[in-house]
Image (cartoon, rainbow, N blue to C red; front, side, top):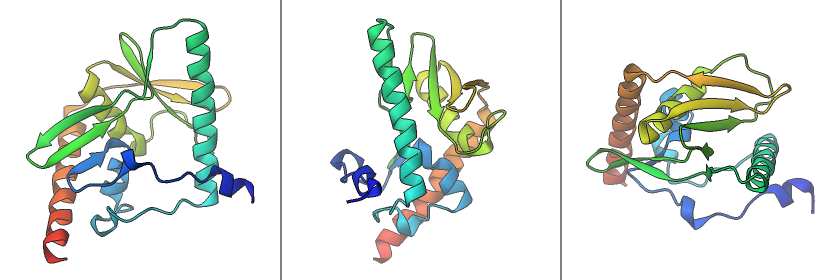
Length: 177
């Protein structure tokens, strides 16, 4: 057995894909066409580089959860929200760390960033819409970086448009299957 076999997780029933239930972390992939409507219900294979990214991000988050607990800092880890978009469309949002007045969404990119890349702004906007709290992007890099997200009605409208368009294509595919 190699390390990648160990890192590969068994399918979690909580993450079963369903038409009409979408994840905010996939909004960019929907917009750019990386996630295609025909592939929504198919199991996604994660390559070794992806497994490493997931490992490092989850390891660092787990350590931070432990530190927050040791210091008795009031925080919820990955609390689930569901935003009703319209009949048949729900967006699931799970901010990494939720504090009283703000949330932090962490990323662990291979390449350092100097701000909020477009690929993460949709997820951050959805987290704002779900919590109405200040949203901060935390980046596990050296040094660790933090960037405050500025909410945008224009981005929120674009998210709803992306979801409605993607959903209509998924429904159409299901009708013809």
